[in-house]
Length: 270
Image 1 (tube, rainbow, N blue to C red):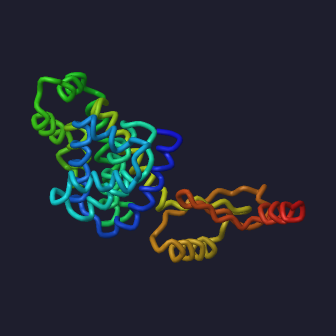
Image 2: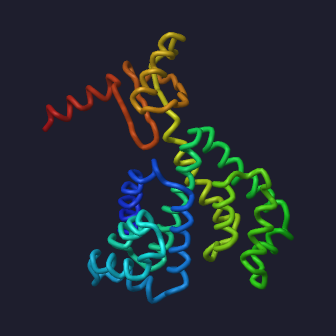
């Protein structure tokens, strides 16, 4: 996904963040259900990605189709999705799949933070490893003659210790891989988990090793700044000259001397 579709996905994912604190797996199941409806109706996909239609027009169309069939929360997410512009009909389905998976991942995260994400990551990785090592399983999970339900039963047997979040993502990947092999789709879900984990990891560059006291103050300050218990990775980089550079997820906090001098030079040159 690139161009306008990539920008649209970034927009709807940002909007979804405000809904995640109270989200449940039920919301994710509803979004996966709407995805199934989109995947089974090419005309609907074309209508929802038609550049000649306004976002409001497309939102009205969606309301007509799903009103009363999903929660108001799920309907709102889908309206936000269809109100954006999409380069092609496939992209809107891929985006909805990403949103649903993001809800699942956020539910796993909310329970116990990074530990919940680590557990979900291990469950998905375990599924991938088991499938990759057994060609018979690969054929069975991709068998066009087998029912989705029978394949889901088989898939979940491979990860008997998986929790509700892991089971839902594996269920979706096996039931509706959308043209991919189930393990490949689980890998995509795993990438989303890894990206979410970065929100809990602070990568800190400093000019010299920190003392125990400095590290404790840094940890405390970062935890307070981001309102969560971060894992801090320290890298010593003498080229910084002074200061500290911190990145958490996509956010960079840079107070190094080099950066401040560069900013000053740009201001003087401007």
